[in-house]
Length: 327
Length: 257
Ligand SMILES: Nc1ncnc2c1ncn2[C@@H]1O[C@H](COP(=O)(O)OP(=O)(O)OP(=O)(O)O)[C@@H](O)[C@H]1O
Ligand SMILES: [Mg+2]
Image 1 (cartoon, protein in one colour):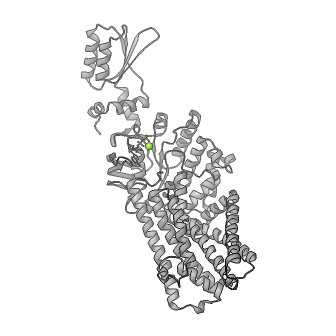
Image 2 (image 1 turned 60 degrees about the vertical axis):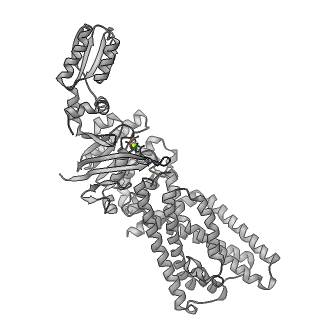
Image 3 (image 1 turned 120 degrees about the vertical axis):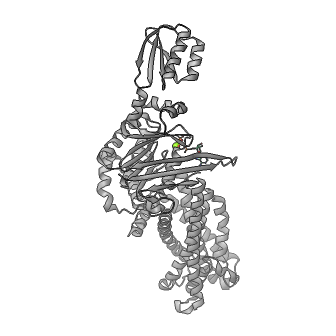
């Protein structure tokens, strides 16, 4: 399969408007995305996700590096590259609030050169599927945030491009709408051969839709792997200690310093210590810490991980991951 | 074909919004008419009665061109400012046809609507003043189109400013007086104005409408000046605009307000 998106050594700094201070938002990012892949772009706030997406849209010129879309250099042949891309940018400002749903769809498709006839069938189909048929003649400003987001996604799909970028598509939506959007995206992914890049903080989106994740932190890629690999990797490292005596203050302190831990208590007043251990040395160290206070261990289990935990661990314990899993 | 599609959707959008917010359009026509009345009465009361009719005719032409110049020259700038406020500017920049083509389609659409409004105003003014201009459409039309082209060129330059500075309302307010200068000052008074946009065109339209010229009465120099003016300003406008876009994309300020 060919690389439909190729990002090589891309860097970008912004000048802060007031202080004129230079902020390095993206510090040399590399990745390639194959046709038909569904990739999650994750990272904490300010990691550089939106900056990266905007550069992949040619809306922002990188300071260094190159971006190819379907083999086309987006800097040199921007308009040509845009034929393969559509995007739903962050926030709820992708559409016109003073036009109706249908007028929005027709307008944006028209601006890409599609005549009304060409899109009619597809538009009806999309409106139907997005549950927007009854709202098609309503003004966008009278719709809920979730419906507005669906309209924005429908516009991106109507453009019929091979690549779609979605920047935080479920941000600020209630659980129900978020679920609906997830379901719609999943359906689309299954039916159409689209390449989708989703930036999100919404882990269910990642777990249900994405095959692969790229995690960025401080403007760099820290992990680029398949979702199931990451889950497996972490599963084998997450342990749950059930202890018969509460931990002392110094034990807690040392544990928190050395590991990524959560300490809680179960119904039987037993202390639960959830910890990620990446090496055997780590295991010895924990038992050592417990031994010092003669803390009785009831049992040790593998704990169940979801992607949220995986993500938190990677972002918090970046160094530790690098040891086990070099990018 | 794509041009036609672009023009169609942008014209449709223009018409939808005018229909939806027709009060705006109506109040604009009314205020235009009131200002015209004031000027007309001024000429009647304080002006020399022997030149009153000629003066009125000048006022009608100048005033109408001033209105049109303001509308067209600041048109794309307003579109950009508006899109920035709405947050949709970046989506327009995702079109593989290029944002500038969309803006051109928009300004052409809105100019056609403005011309419609101007015709209504023209008839109202002439009825009120009881004076009739020589509206030789066949002669006026080509000159008019070339004049509009130079206006659109300037419109792109101003839009370039809007892409970088976002809010340029105060600049647009001041520029109204510059536009007034371009449309009110006759070329015979300040010949160097021939290098400025619009001036030559308005001058030629005046000759036709007031002094009954036909196309055959103009010299080759007149046409050369008019055509060069249109081409230079349009090309310059688009170049300036794309430079400004590029700058905004480098600085990361394209969609920001
Ligand atoms: N236009 C701008 N001008 C100055 N600094 C900016 C600009 N846009 C982003 N930044 C800074 O660049 C860094 C990366 O921002 P970016 O928006 O790409 O992060 P993000 O990963 O999308 O974050 P979030 O999850 O909050 O959306 C941040 O430190 C941000 O403050
Ligand atoms: Mg972001």
